[in-house]
Image (cartoon, rainbow, N blue to C red; front, side, top):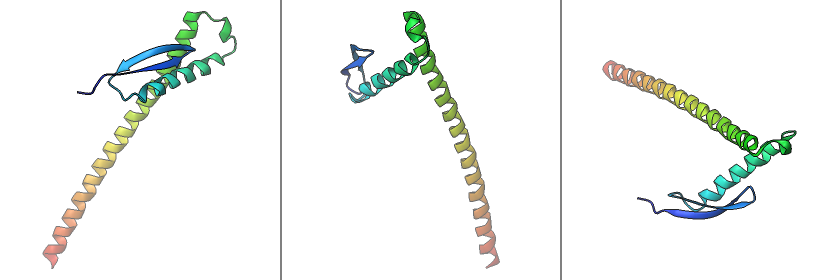
Length: 106
């Protein structure tokens, strides 16, 4: 089992200690992603006037949006890969049949 790691990261101007079983380099990536999302959302007109709860919900919605778009893309790629594997299997079957016919003709 992997060893537990921790890392101090800066999110929204505050230091947080993150722990888990990931490589230590992973945590700054996560924090950077969150900071980028916070920065993106803060560019919305009138953002400064929103309540803290509304700001938090906007960040969460943006992260969820990214998640579902990537999940849908992954499902599409997996489906495409499955179709390609089936096509490849069919082509391999055709090749084997052709090779067997060629051997019989010889």
